[in-house]
Image (cartoon, rainbow, N blue to C red; front, side):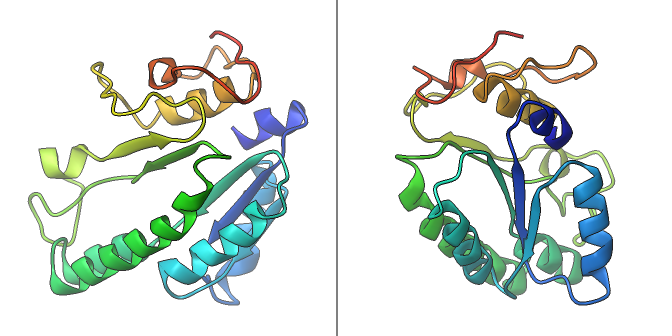
Amino acid sequence: MSRVLARAGIPTDIVTADLGPAALPVAWALASTAGARRLVAKGLRAWDTAAAAQRLLSQREDGLLFVYLPDCDRAGHAHGWMSEQYLEAAAHVDAGLGLLSGWTDEAVFIITADHGGGGVTASEHHEPHPVNDHIPLIVAGPGVTRRHQLTRAISLLDVPATVLWWFGVPVPGDYEGRPLAKAFARVSGPTPVPA
């Protein structure tokens, strides 16, 4: 998706938690190959990572800002989903999202997780189970329909298609996902191109 956006002149920046000196070059190699313009690895907790994302938002540059808050994932794998450590991590992520929520009048946010967990094995998500397979997806910002629940089945594959649609970039034919256009009442960003 970042490569498709870059070809359309729309940059992608990535903000994630601190990766450590060994992982940072690898992460940058992957991110830049995928078309990212910038990678910021900052913070041991979601609040610090969200604050780094907020600094980029305050620069008011157009483009995609991808923010990864790994607190819940790390705690879930290490201690089990819904463990005391997981719930503490969830509170940190909630605080980080709260910090970023002040930007919803100016930017569209798509908030999701890459997976659920703990449905069969407390610290894993590999086996089919509703707790492993069903995850939240929240869309907020200018032009987003308020208090609307999408009724069709939604996949993580729909997120890249929605991002491209929002920026008015045609969704490649080989993308499996479809834009979540019904989540938007009126697009106040770039004019979307129907897929």
